[in-house]
Amino acid sequence: MLALMARLLVVKATAGADAPERCSQAFTVASTAAASGVDVSFWLTGESAWFALPGRAAEFELPHAAPLPDLLDLLLESGKVTVCTQCAARRDITPDDVLPGIRIAGAAAFVEEIMGEGAQALVY
View (cartoon, rainbow, N blue to C red):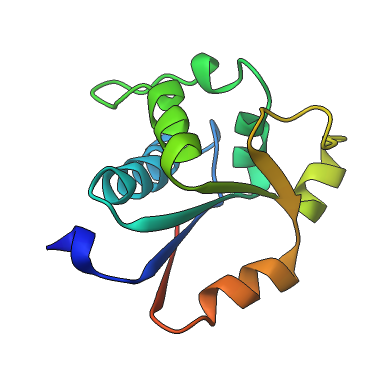
């Protein structure tokens, strides 16, 4: 049933290793939706911005949670992954630094996505 819905799920991760359960929840919900055929846009903000860099997701550990690199790969294959412009700038992350397929965009792009018809936004 989920695959038939023509909606966009926008998930914003605001936490990284500083709040591992919240971070994992964002990745898990977004990747589960993407695996179910839902159109997903996943935003890395705050400390989660670090996961846009090669190898950083592999450093994340949380017992009983799916490996972050697997979830990120799924999102890159089937959805859209974006790093917040200001969050990237605060961490000196540039477009040349991020994994292939990840874009850097700002609040205007986020607002455009969440205000689209049928869009649903979740913030973790």
